[in-house]
Amino acid sequence: MRNDLTIIGREIAVFLLAALFLALTIVPVYIDVAWMNDALHETSFTETTQECMLAMIAALFFIAAQRRPAQRGALTLVAGFYSCMLIRELDFVFDTIQHGSWVWFALAVTAGSLAVALRTPKKTLHALANLLLHRSWPVMASGFLVVLVFSRLFGVHALWQHLMLGDYNRVVKNMAEEGTELLGYSLCWLASVRYLWQTRPAAAAVSVRATESASARHNASPVTSH
Image 1 (tube, rainbow, N blue to C red):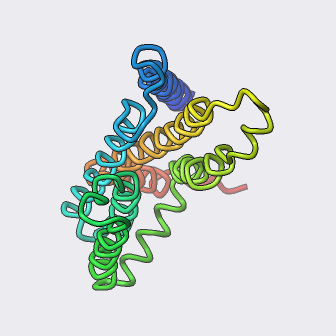
Image 2: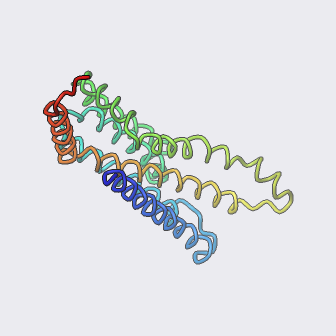
């Protein structure tokens, strides 16, 4: 019972912290709309927040890959994926080099990530399978779906033109689309931080010791015959 109460209390705390984090993510949107006079553009607070989240996630996975040899291939692939998403968000920066050049940078990151992952294919597949089985994965996948699917469909011009008729305002459409993307990136950030925290080497060692202790107690318990 004590263990159950600990789990419930911990999950409630995580839920409240996640709720606070998501509530704070609306602040950049509010600043852009209310304080910056609808300045929802490529260098707005909303888009900058998205890019900072992606950069942080990618950096955390790259650092974890460096420190966890057994998971290096899988973590590098995840870090590379988030890096490509960041490069796509920063396409306006790469356009100063040549229009559409972000694609070549994304391909370079993809090739490098695959090269690392293919060095140890079995370990990479095993680590990827563990990631997909972790309870943080559904939240991360939800974030991907919000960003890559829902926000794109939600931001279709025809939908908003039909909704606002002759009063069509592109800024309103941009606010809805960018705000939805920010929600998706926030889910990815929450899921990534929790996954990396719960799978850190220290936590894994504690889990193994707890399992061994429970097994030892089970083997030591007297067998009752009937």
